[in-house]
Length: 400
Ligand code: FAD
Ligand code: UDP
Image (cartoon, rainbow, N blue to C red):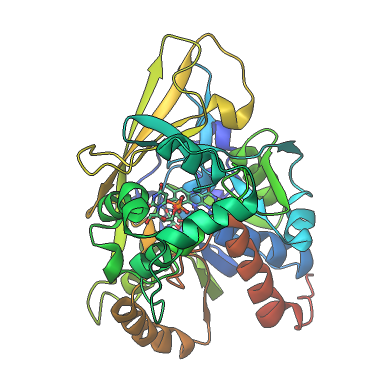
């Protein structure tokens, strides 16, 4: 039962409980309260519980675990991702080994096509993209490299997300593949965004059409939510879902707080709002076996209001006579999904970070709390490193 804070299995998860259900007489003490049951919070909770033998209460205001990686079976029985497609990829064996305690893997290499000039062509731009789009017959890496070099427009100092692409492939390909998509996704021109954003997408001269270069690319065999269930299934971990931590932080006293929500919100927006970009997801199930040729199709054309469509069965390997897809519509308002990488936002974050560093009994971890455009593996790596640095050195608590 919730008042005693027992672990709620995700398949039983439901929107919960008003905070008035936590009267003071039921209050309990925990060593650590963890805010957020996404990768950052769940890795921290798992380490604190299993390695330091600390009593942990994980609180998430959503009615489920797994944060933005939450997946579940929809009405058609298709395993879908509530908050957009999540594909796991990493170069870190340590991170693979850590997560492999909680899941087996399904090998999966992600491939994406972009709809450009009425054609579907590989993105990242590769030799196949060039040959298809311009009716060329480039046969070798060298020929493709020479072709790109003839179009590229060198930029003295690569600073922005426009510079990265224009200096690699020239203005025309930049406009076809990146300008419109980026304007939609971020609500601003690539020239206003840090170079790191479009630098996530490489340019290739070979015919490798995988979206990622990483050495390990796979999906959790039974989905992300199952992996999180196993991470959080520890006698030292209790879980409260559907409750904002501000509503229970007094009732459940704790020696330390781990916070993985938006850092500006934690500090009451004292210096103003940190910009985060949001998305609206439109989920559909279609009464046919397949909808598109690959897992994700990108729509860089600015006249199309969405950025991409994902078809989940490619990610999971499920078979079904029906198929489920998600359209992503970028939005200024809504859940904070993406920190927006640009210098002025980083400067504002640094002011909040200074406040954070002065709080010795609070640890800030994760994509929202450290305002970093991190992939899942990077958040896992950050949480493991934070645990090691701040907690592992200390003696395990002696329990009587
Ligand atoms: P989150 O998952 O956001 O978890 C934070 C949790 O804290 C949330 O559940 C929130 O409800 C909770 N919370 C916040 N404030 C409070 C509060 N006051 N009280 C209680 N709870 C609170 N990464 C990849 O590696 N590969 C991908 O393919 C990929 N695709 C993505 C696609 C999209 C559309 C998005 C948005 C992200 C994608 N990512 C991907 C990134 C990935 O989602 C993040 O790296 C990861 O989920 C971040 O984990 P986190 O724990 O830091 O944050
Ligand atoms: N991008 C683009 N066109 C594409 C794919 C990506 O302009 O077809 C740019 C866009 O700015 C995007 C960024 O590159 O936000 C990073 O792309 P990625 O697919 O990594 O975004 P994410 O999956 O994190 O939303």
